[in-house]
Image (cartoon, rainbow, N blue to C red; front, top):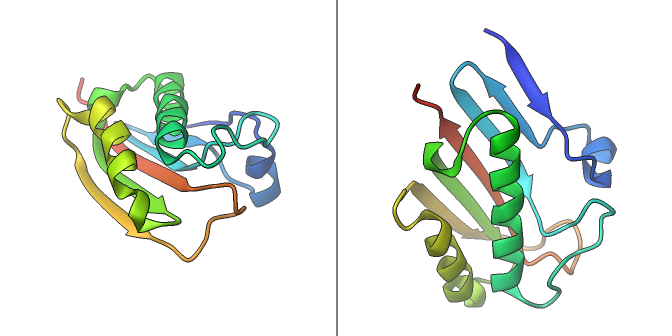
Length: 129
């Protein structure tokens, strides 16, 4: 099977040596994605809803880069710095996935890569052709 991988060029990808998304056959895996822009600046500081929405737009673009789409997502994993933010994070997640309804986990972690990062999301997708 052919392996296709994409990078969005963010500093984190080269520092840690990973791809934003990898597609092998009909399986797509999108790496843990934060609200960092192409220069590494965190977007929507202090706003868990805004960060989640920004992240989901980045994930959607990564999926499209490997010929997949949000409707192909079967699992989301959401890592949060503060579980007290779960409602605003869940609200954004619902806005993107309400009709798709992938399986989901939301886990509080002790911290993310930088203190400004409030949310990190990774997804798995299966492209059915």
